[in-house]
Image (tube, rainbow over the protein chains, first blue to last red):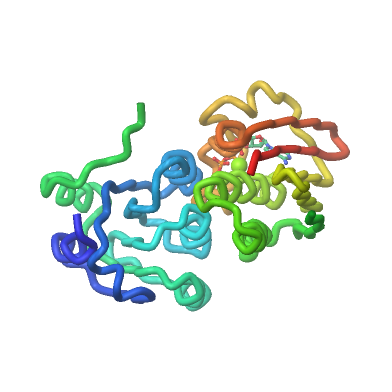
Length: 121
Length: 137
Ligand SMILES: Nc1ncnc2c1ncn2[C@@H]1O[C@H](COP(=O)(O)OP(=O)(O)OP(=O)(O)O)[C@@H](O)[C@H]1O
Ligand SMILES: [Mg+2]
């Protein structure tokens, strides 16, 4: 699913767009969690075409994105970033959005549109 | 080929992860494959966070040898892990509220580190914990 479609389905608003060219990038799957070590556990073997949905909006959510080479992060329930976290998004040149939907609803919307989760095995 | 020490500051929640970020960047510059770097970054980040939230900070040593073997040693200043078997159990955690608010405390860190690394060794006592992991570059 293209980044711009994901953003559209979630009616997500940009917090920071570090790489506008990636709005045409195809994302193969999505991972949703407020626990960063869950994200680190699940995503570490994947390619970097995973979108992260999270309600965890502090510096560590972007550190996690950095470690995993994630470039699209969507914060749920209308959360926004403090200035330190925003600075980091700028450094990492990732695309950061916020949606009013809850984590559950955001997942449901993307799943019903055909985006898959990570195969947990 | 490359040898470097980094300091990790006790309870510095804002900056935890910065050393792992530096390590990742340095190894990228040397020319390691992004896929391996992702594994290294995940392990290093989890271990660095453990040093900040469970121990009293310490030192991270990175060594890259001529064959491309990457070794990372995380040496903290205590209080050690009383029961390693429990600590290595997925979901088992003693993380405090502050760590949990930052998205940690799932009890997955050590398990993750072991899974993504090629070798994993942990020595622990009340004086501190030494975690040594390596990756074939
Ligand atoms: N360096 C350390 N010094 C002392 N205790 C530690 C250290 N590392 C881990 N532990 C203990 O082992 C437990 C499990 O560690 P692990 O990293 O697997 O999970 P966590 O840090 O609690 O949560 P997560 O890593 O998923 O955010 C910790 O809760 C803590 O009690
Ligand atoms: Mg941990």
